[in-house]
Amino acid sequence: MLYNLREYHRPRDLDEALRLLQRPEIRTVPLAGGTDLVGQRNPDVEAVVDLSELGLDTIHTEDGVLRLGAMVRLQTIVEQLGDAFGGLLAEAAHRMAGWNIRNVATIGGTLAAGKVDSPLGVALAALGAEMAVTGQDELIPWPGVPAGGLQGRLITAVELRLAEGKVGTAYEQVARTPVDQPIVSAAAVVREVESGTLSARVAVGGLLASGLKLLDFDIQWPDLSGLDALTADINPADVKSDYLGRPDYRLAIAPVVARRALSAALARIGYETEAEGGTAS
Image (cartoon, rainbow, N blue to C red; front, side, top):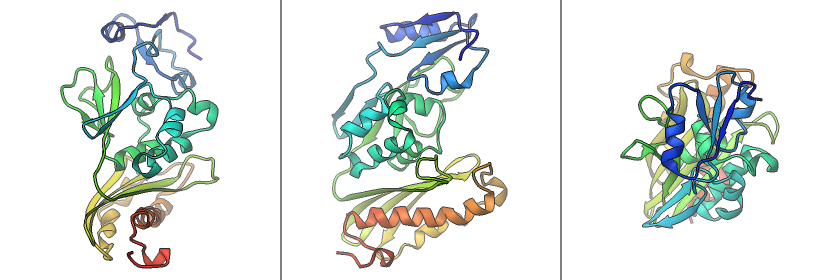
């Protein structure tokens, strides 16, 4: 609960929302789905700005770019974007939480909360997502943040470029139970440049204490040695450690999870590794 809350605003204009958020005399924060904000129990919050009337809940495609408004609910992604990017977005959104939470939580709120290691955060990084942020002339690659953070600013949309040609995607994770948040996770996106030549991006969450590990490399099929660079330059002191897993476990399991995701992504566009039981088709 927000025990010191004394103002609630529901503007219909983005400029008005920003004016309220930028007031120096009262600590004001945006309210998207509220699933994180309410749980934080922050005693400093005195006012909230409800974003639900700003028209930020649309999804559309234009000039090869998929644009999701910041107020798009996670359940909407599950229901409407099952075919986008081989189902990667929908799967990641589904893994974020149960049905009740997904119907409230938003994509913008997820990113604003800095959930880089979450399934959706990892999937968006692998897909090269960019954020539209008020006061910024250019899009910001996720998981970056603007200089000075998001105080007084809003994420208004998330954009993903739709690739042409054959694209394979996959998400894998290890967790204590199937419904728990991941200890380590990986999303892989593979694009076929020409037959036997592919470009790959693998995003791994839960490995580094400082955020995601991103690896871009080319594949000359069937050579997957580019994935070896995933942990080659990592200092064990930089590996994440918490109640879910020790650094040595994370460092050992991350390449396994990443290879599973990469192999599954390759198989979906006809390149099956030996682990998948075949060769390129």
